[in-house]
Length: 109
Image (cartoon, rainbow, N blue to C red; front, side, top):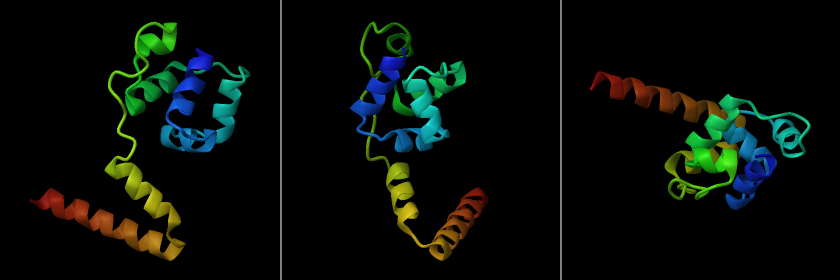
């Protein structure tokens, strides 16, 4: 299973840091899992399957197709996150406030 986790990450062309960020864990956690120092928890495996549309049976056994369907590599969320990361801190604050205001506006309609 450890090798398959790494295979998913490499197939998606993500660094350990990028892969971890999208799953809510640090690069060190990914590294420790990939090198077999720490076994992956069930919740972590579920996140991989949900986030990247990975076939849980394949992840567990290696049987079947890796993906249930091909993941959307350039989703709007990923694009927005990449842009957000490039902003200076004061612009990040402004962008976050705008998103919050849009959410409030949407709730009203």
